[in-house]
Length: 310
Image 1 (tube, rainbow, N blue to C red):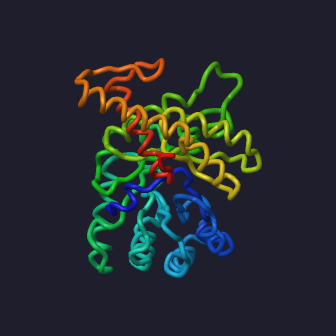
Image 2: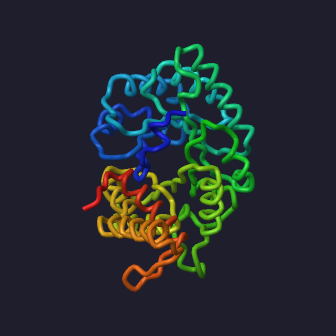
Image 3: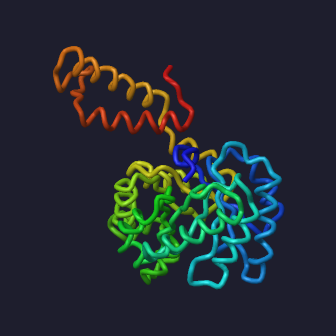
């Protein structure tokens, strides 16, 4: 896949309905790290085939800057998947970075998309392997198979949790779609978050949380974002422009955290290479190899977000 998109941040992944000309035109002006032009749930069945041309036109004619640009096609259990891939990938040109596959149930579904993409790339004059894949985990079967899914293709760049469809798959009676349930003594999605995160990290992928459906609840959204940010997720979907700003803030380290991580790396390097000791005090904190690994992760996140040492 594109080395450019694998290394780019995905703090804010903004959903854009592929059939809505107004939203397509407005989206490039947002400060989102990633945009996905949606042919699936945001498009009515009678509009799906017509939306393909609108999406291709938006990709080819609008200025998306350096953001990662993706198209969410329809799932393999529909009649639209192959047409989405052939028409959109075949017509969009090199600016399209990724295809998002929803409702991934097995590794074989990712392999099938990989094979189809290879044929489309060859026939469209694109470099083979140019288009990356984002796999959306939205069902009980998908969660059971998520480890195999994460290693299914070298094109894979991210795993994404789809909380609303997952709730439906599990037969959960709540209509909250992944939102906190006061009656439950804990976070009932914690296992789901961690299972997807571990699979993604083991495969070297970025891991993204899905949507927060209450688009006019900024404080609730900020609180929801923290649920997965503290676990180590790389970002989350936005459904409204106001959510983009919150995501870019929540999923970025502060300048103080970034500088502290660099202090840890400097102190540990001096301790191991100069003093030849494996642990050292930095202020009132003992740091060692484990501290270095955490600091490296935080520095990488900060640099993806554009931070520099102060």
